[in-house]
Image 1 (cartoon, one colour):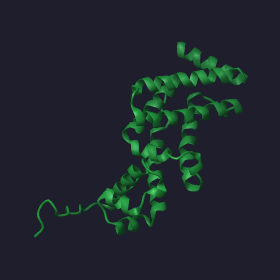
Image 2 (tube, rainbow, N blue to C red; image 1 turned 30 degrees about the vertical axis):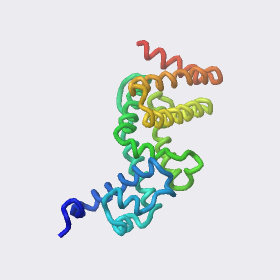
Image 3 (cartoon, one colour; image 1 turned 30 degrees about the horizontal axis):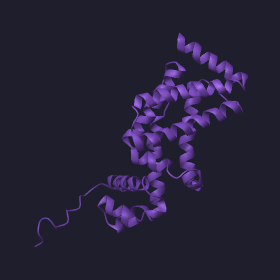
Image 4 (cartoon, rainbow, N blue to C red; image 1 turned 90 degrees about the vertical axis):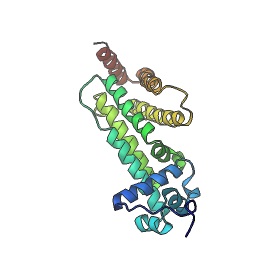
Length: 218
């Protein structure tokens, strides 16, 4: 009989969905720290306390696991970005940022894995998943600002701000040397500042900014 300290723990009996979730969670944790090509199925199996064969049983291979894990993270983040009713546009923007950073804080590995690597590594299905999150955030901001169709200047401004929010989220996870509430307020002010610059080049943005400021003061 093996000594107690060397015996392998009994494998827990989990439902199919729960086992898949555990495997994806383990994969996200690894993908958040290392490039996908540097993570093996054996790494994921070991991190999840599962067998290599089980990982292949559920996902077929590493690419399928990578896509499934990122899609799971994206769906969770997108669920946080569903529009809320009521409120002034700037207040709604602040509320949306809180929900966004709730996800960043609660699902750090998923957020980091989703955005890690930059545009060069975002081709094909992976790129579609990441772009889907960005599109959801873009549409949320448009709804909050009550804009049906953005001008080229406004579209560029909003997409630039979204990139800043993503970068700020990754930086905050890495350093955590600024209060989250402070960072969220700073990003709201950043949006207003960007709109101020854009207003110089676009009359529609100028009118939008005036409306946002006026509503915020009432």
